[in-house]
Amino acid sequence: MPIVRKQLKPADVYPDTIRYNPSGDKVQVLIDGEWVDAPESDPRNQTTLPPRATADPACDGAQSIADALENQIAQIITAIDNSLTLFQIAGLILGLFSFGVFAIFINIALAIADFMFGLGATAIQAALPPTAYEQLACILYCHMDANGRIKVGHLPQIYQELVDAIGATGGQVLIEMMSLAGEGGLNNLAAAGTSTGDCSGCDCGSWCYLFAFTSAGNGGWAVFPRNGVNFGTYELGSGWVYTDAVAVQTGINTASREVRIARTFTSVVITKVTVTYAYTFGASDSTALQAFDLSVGGTVRITRTFAQLIPGSSQDIVYEPAGGVTATSIQVGVRSSRDTSVPLTYSGNAAILAIRVEGTGINPFGADNCP
Image (cartoon, rainbow, N blue to C red; front, side):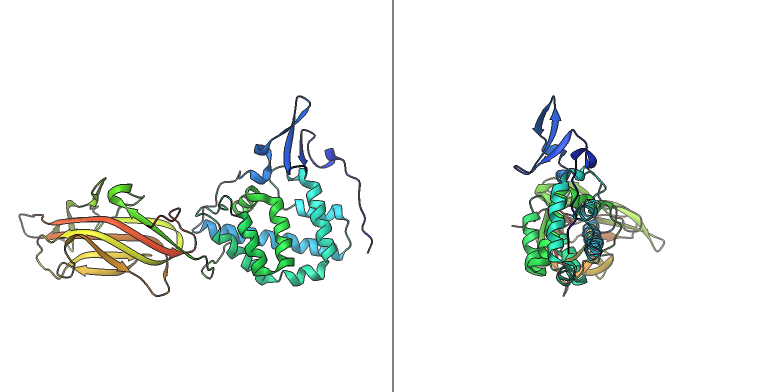
């Protein structure tokens, strides 16, 4: 079918003071009559929108990008079927980006339009079924940080994984669109979207994060109350150590020497938690009472009584659920004594030295750091 082309003038689509120079793939600005390279003005490099405030910004952001690309490509397929001009198709491509001066990339958009027009609507539809966009969302999710931002330098790996998972034709269509967006444009699409994703089936490999409290700070953990009373304090060199306090339990004043801490994070699959503690039993009116508890995702997973908890200066308790559990929080408590008899007394030692957390998906704590 014939292709209708239209002569374009730069000022028709973007300001005269900024341009795209295909020689070197550079954005330039006009200063004192001279064109100067301005990478800081390249919208492909600019993440201007704040992260989404959702339970899982990475998953929701990845789904938002996938949905935006699927919707835009659907419009392009319709445009090809209706024999629209390359200029009109390029306009649809650029219409995906409502932020930044993406209009300066009109020549890139025309090249993408020409590429997709050459493939034809039928070939594009066959190469990009709905499952392809599900795969795209998972691939993006696996390369995002916890805030829903593409990890710096990960785009080439994303592109290769797209081709491997979807195929050369569908993968290349997505790569052309994503290359136009750049890291900044994709981050902004993720932030501007409203989609809610489900990344529970995404296989991103495993991660591991070690909170070495004795040497590396409190790790963002905070004291967590029992019966409305906080127990524990952080000391560099010692970790999270006990404090003495009285809590009212079933109407009875109960003195405990205890440390209780908690950490929240974005939703992720936890496959293993290892708590390293120090413990010396002091005294209790019953050794059958709880001395240790570990909760993951708001559910108590492990408990130990005073009689069961192994004493020592560095002991481990490991929670390793089959298949992992999806969670947004972990709480740990260790206590060495409990007394309800007047005068109330405290004894023994309780401290949390380290917590090692392992999981799949996006590491919510940062870069892997386990030895």
